[in-house]
Image 1: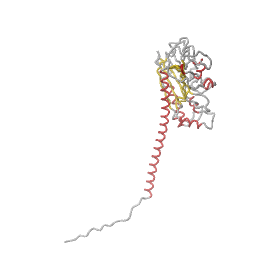
Image 2: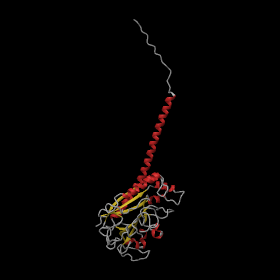
Image 3: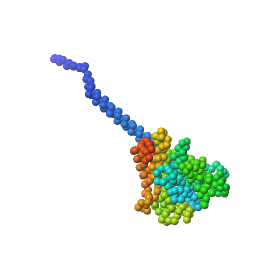
Image 4: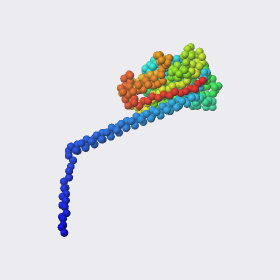
Length: 361
C-alpha cells in the first residue's frame, strides 16, 4: 500500500496595517458625519425653539379671540345704548387717533380701543346685592409708561359689572352708575372713563381702573374694522351710501350697529422670550423702544380711497402688510426708525385675525 504524505500548511504570521492615506480618509469621513449630525441637531433645536414660541403665541391668541367671541356674541345690539367704537365721531377714526400706523404723536394714540355693553357677568364689589347680568366690556393695549408698568404693551380687558337700573342716580365721580340707555354715553360717566382712555392721553386718573386685567400678555398690537351687510370693509360703522348724512351712531338717526355684519379683529403677538430679547437689545439705549416702533410700523385699517369696490380694502390687506413688516424686520434687524430688533425675536411674532358675526337685525 502506498502512503501519501499530508500536505504541509505554511502559516504566515505577518499582519497587514492601515496606511497613512487610509487613516486620513477615515478621519475625514468621520469628521463629515459629525458635522452633518451637528447641523441636523442645530436645525432641529432651532425648529423646536421656534415651534415652541409659536405654540405660546397660538395659545395666547386663542384665549384672547375666544374671550372676544363670547363678549361680542352677548353684546347688547340695540339702538338706544351707547358704543365706544372707531368712527368719525367717537374718536378720530383710526385707533383713538392712531393715524395710519406711523408712530405715536399728536393725534396718534396707538392700537385701537373698543367698549360696549354685554350680557356677560362681571365683577363689581360696590354693591353686590344689586348686581345685574349686564357689564361694560372694553379692550385696549396698555400704553402707559414702560417703567414699572407690568401691563405695558399688553392687551387688557375690562369687565365692569353693572347694577340694576334705579340702584343709584348719582352723577359724581364716585357714584354707582346703573345707566346704559341713551342719551347717557360711556364717555360721560366718570367711573367708566378708563373704558375710553389710555395712558397715552396724559391723564393717569382717567386711564386706570381695577376692573382692567391683562388678558393677552403677548399681544402688543390690536386693530379692528367692520364688514358691512353690503359686503364692504370699512372703518366707519355704517353704510355711507344708504346713510350719506349720518355723522355718528345716533345722529341724525339712531342706528346702533345694524349696518354691521361682522367686526374683524387683528392682533399681533409675541412670546415672552422674544419680548425679553427685544428689551435686552434696548438695555443700553433707554430712550429707544423697539417693540413700540415695530407696532407703529404696522398700518391701521383705513378705507382705501382708490378705485375698485367703492375704494374699500380687500380682506387680508392690512394683515398682509403687518406680516410684511415682520418679515422685513426679521431680515434687516431694525424697524423703519432704525430701532434694533433681534431677527430671531421678529421671526417669533405672529399675526392673527378673526371675524365676529354680530347677528344684528
